[in-house]
Length: 198
Image (cartoon, rainbow, N blue to C red; front, side, top):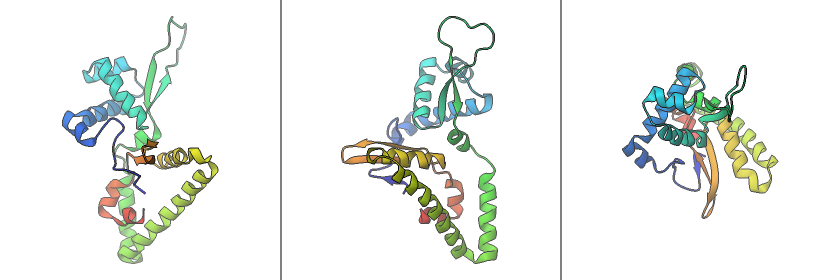
């Protein structure tokens, strides 16, 4: 279920291109700055990161497409000045979850406990199968409730709500569903049963 229809890619281009140009690490710096300082304007981000505003906008566009960041109107307190209020960018729940949290440690401790006390690798595999079965039920419901032409997008939204940062788009041979993040990647390194169940 990791990717339907084609090789995994990022909306801004091929991963190899991003690694070669440093695009991904700069995007991570932009997202980290928003995490550290709260919602921010393009000018604030450019000043903090030593980038041009055009470069920051380009990275923000990619982060918005990935579902990591969202644009909001800045609240104006007091008398409003002329012109449009500056947009601020804030992390989405999915974007916030992408940063290291102690949930990975908690999940690994729980799975290790299950393995040690409840039946080893097979107990972990049974847990993983039950987990994905529950998720599959929710995904199936989201797809069935959508109009036929909206089903791939409905599945992408359901996956994104679970932290997969999924997107859907038309492809030459149908529709393409891409997941840009795996919310259990760190835990799955030690417990591959999670990936096997998916």
